[in-house]
Amino acid sequence: DGGITQSPKYLFRKEGQNVTLSCEQNLNHDAMYWYRQDPGQGLRLIYYSQIVNDFQKGDIAEGYSVSREKKESFPLTVTSAQKNPTAFYLCASSMPGSDTEAFFGQGTRLTVV
Amino acid sequence: AQKVTQAQTEISVVEKEDVTLDCVYETRDTTYYLFWYKQPPSGELVFLIRRNSFDEQNEISGRYSWNFQKSTSSFNFTITASQVVDSAVYFCALSERYSSASKIIFGSGTRLSIRP
Image 1 (cartoon, one colour):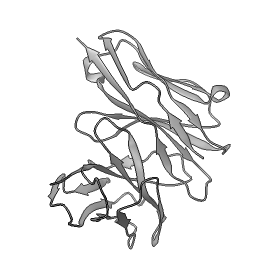
Image 2 (cartoon, chains in turn blue, red):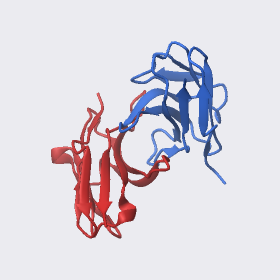
Image 3 (cartoon, chains in turn green, yellow):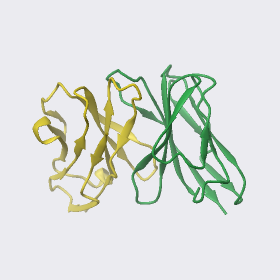
Image 4 (tube, chains in turn yellow, purple):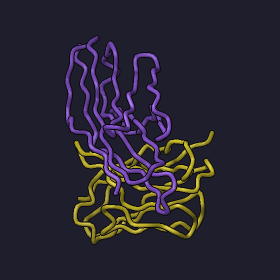
């Protein structure tokens, strides 16, 4: 079945450690996105990528890094520079310029202790 | 720049009441897409509807209906005869189609609670 997979669902890390969240899609979508959601808050765009080997900063990119070496994969690294990393992270993919919606993964809940 | 505003942070109604969720957007593009998503407690976003900027027809799907008005830059969502299962957070989103840096921007969401 086609879809977008995020792993793991729950992640715990100690403060000061970098952590990488996985996002894989088999929908053949060109565009991929990372959003952050804090409790009771909306979705804020961290990074997005329109094509392999290219990506742009979203509204809250500081303290995060991404790579897009393959069309199917768009991992997000939460670095130690991110001051408040505990949040719910959602990955999405879509075909830009088309009239299809974005498909979302199930999310990763990151807790930094 | 793109912007989506959902002014209603939380709404609580009694089951079977009708409820309307408001969405106002800003964009400089003439071609764009609007979306509504539902986020149940599990966290995953569920797609509900998309509308392109050239299609101002209202749409009805069962108890759900959407009212798109370009003149007021609004894309409101109405649930008729609400049910407890409709309780969730609802997000409105905007995507510009021909932007060289196309991205999807979400509103802050409206938390809808349906009381039995």
